[in-house]
Structures are given as C-alpha cells and as structure tokens.
Length: 354
Image 1 (cartoon, rainbow, N blue to C red):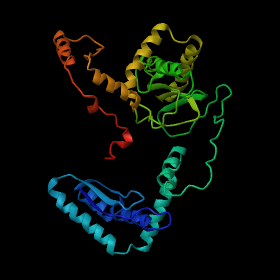
Image 2 (image 1 turned 180 degrees about the vertical axis):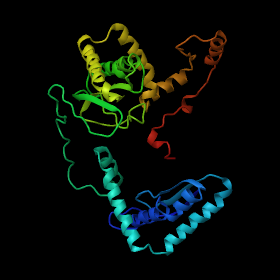
Image 3 (image 1 turned 120 degrees about the vertical axis):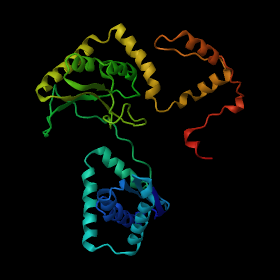
C-alpha cells in the first residue's frame, strides 16, 4: 500500500526539501519507531520505504509498505498516517536530529568511492543550477589512460576465499574506429560476456574447471555483474581491452592468468580460423537483436516491409515438425492489407507527448 502527500520542490537556496527528506527518514526509515514495530517486531510488513524525488516542481512524497496479509492493510495504513501526523506536529529531539544529519552526511560521503557514483550523484542536482554564461569549454583532447610497461600486477589485499583477476590495457579503438567491428568479432570469440561459447570460458572453466566466468571486453562495462548486455548510449573518448577471470581459488590464480595470456597471445599471433570467424560472426548477427537497445534506424525498413505485405518466413536454427512448417506457410501468407496512412513512425521522445 502507499500513502502520499504533496511535497516541496527542490531548491538550491531553500531548506524545505532537504528538511523534509531528513524528517521522512526519521519517521519511516530503518531507525524509526514505526519501522521497528511494523517490520521487526510485529512483522506485518516486509518492506517499508519512502520516495521524495528532487524535482523542479512540487511532487508527491510517498511512503510504500508491502503488507504480508491483506487483513493488516487498514492497520498499516492508519499507522503510517499517524506517523505523518506526528511528523507534522511534533518536534524532533535535538540529539536525534543531530545524529540523523551526521548519518546522512557521512553516509553520502561513503558512497562517493568511484567516479561513476560521484557523477550519478551530482547529476541529480546540478540540473537545478543555471549554466555559466559564455561559450562552452572545448572538449578535452588526447584522453588516454597510462599504458603499462610489459606486464604489471596490482594485488588488492582483501579478506576473501577467492581471487578475481582483471587484466588489460588502454586501446584507441572506439565505435568510431574502422577496426571496431573486426575487433568486436575477436572479442566475442575470445570471451563474450556471460556466454559459454568463448575460448577463455572453454579453456579455463570447461576443460580445467578452474572457475566460473572468463570474458573479454573492448569497452568499459559498468555494472557487468548485474547485466547481460552493456548499457546503451555511454559515450567515451577512450576505451580499454580487458579480460575478466573470476572467481579463482588462490592456488590456481597464477595458472589461470597464464592460460589467459597464452590464449590471448595465440589470438594475436594466429588470428581466427575461417571456421571460427564464420561461427562467431553468425552468433553476433543473431545476438545483435538482443544487444541493440534501440532499432530506430530500421523503423523505415519495417514500415516498408509491412506495406509491401510479402509473405513472412522464419529461419529456424533446428529442424521443426512438418505440421508446424505447413502452418507457418499459411500464417506467413496472411495479408495485412495496411494502408500507408495507417503506419506511422513516432520518435521515442514523442510517445507520451500526446
């Protein structure tokens, strides 16, 4: 269930939004009395959280509760509304407020431990500030990481039962480079992300059973442990070649590294066989429909195919029953009879404009 009230707009000078954000955390956050009672003690709710978006205009301040039994919904609602009432009428004790402010401040600082997190945090708020007058500064030139001299190793000290290996070096190839497509084919053959068909995966995991995953990359892949495909529209002026080997038992780490370097050297020196090139290219031609987040450049082609109304056919990867193939012929020949004015192309940014 949810309960929502009108909240203040974000302001770079006023304190209303920031004060409300802290007050909501005190009233409904994990340290609040309501959270301890509903979630921990009575266990009527297994999730209780708040949403107070920072927006230019006033928006809803919402409390969400996932109630375990429908019979407790009214009780939970009343308790949430009572907490809202107390927040609006009662003063927060000074010590509790000071502790909350300190926790929020240092909690935010602890999250700013990498450039991506810093950028995403700043992006939430810099949009509220006016840009300085004058022309925009020129983009930086010659963006490049430090190139290693031979093999360099950095070992991160950490209490863990397994070893994770990341190795690679900067490259000048981006998607604008003429060699990108060919290099991407080699990457997929060496170790497609989250795929068992790569050479590294076969040599390190399948044949030797040393670890779980062995993959290769020619682009940065943020959030790789949570995604099968890279996020679209991430613009970079420089890229890197990288191999992931993880996790490996510490006693096998050196051997796993040697196997990866051995297979990489073999790829560089010998290239791909014609058979490997064809099979990898065929895989990528099929996989691109899953990989591509948008296919706007094919919108006109789809419209033309719909209006041409030619029979449709499916290219199966394995044999299918004759009865199914016969049914496909009938369905594929069905006429759509679309009129040109009935097929329109709408830019994605206009989908919800009307």
